Image (cartoon, rainbow, N blue to C red; front, side, top):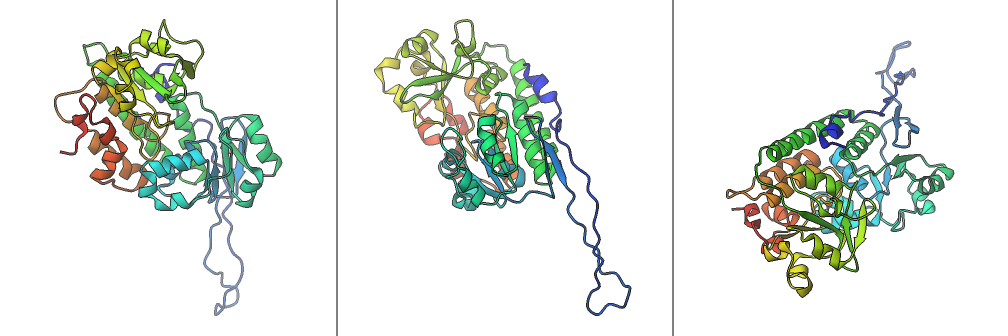
Length: 381
């Protein structure tokens, strides 16, 4: 799907805000005269949302205890809510990203939240989840993952992951509606759309061909790259690059696909991106004789993808920053990048926190990426 068409779709499609009566208290209060009504108190209106399964879930009011099982959901909830107060539990991989990234520093309370409520493959520990007494459990929409929770009497919101920006928009809209903050979804989407137009405009205005960019979802313990119908393929093409794994000589299948060394050597990528789902770093490639003939190694254009409030490689609330980072990596300019100021402003907008220069260095992996080409454009001074 064309990226422009993706972002033109309404973020609020499928979100239904239920109307509810305002209830007035009719009791007397001490010291009041007979027949005098006390101050009125408005009860919360019921809220209904339609999840990505097409199922409608109704809450008596804004949710206050949310268990999230899909990996991007925990940090996305924090971004929509601008805090971790309503996050009751999360997947362990979400917690690791908060610990290893910057979220645990921005919102330290997030690191104290339970994170043992599901297996690596997202199978829920139903009893552990029930013990937390959540208002709602956010889960991938696969019926095998949602049914055990619903059979236990829990309310479940199902999410799809088709690798599109439309998914991010839908997740944000669902979370904002559940939290009773629908305007927050509108704000986040408007800002994301503006950043997308800026990146698209820059790509359209270039005359030089973009580099061949290969994203490794896994590098250690077996190679896995992003093929067609992946979010990584979307943003590689968005900035004006090409993805050899999804081209005419690409891999069969879609999403993340396993490959061998010979295939990568044949593709000869000009830029290599190492994701945040394993510990691979640029020096692991630079120092290995197997990879020395690859264009990206010869030009020292191997980069660890940033890790902020969440991993920048999959779809999420920080994806607009990923687009700008990849654009600058792919088409480095002689002047300093504006990414650091964008990070500072975006974090204030998402998390109500201003990262320090040292924290921005951590997000951008300036220590491990600093020996790669053109990375000085992201230096603080």
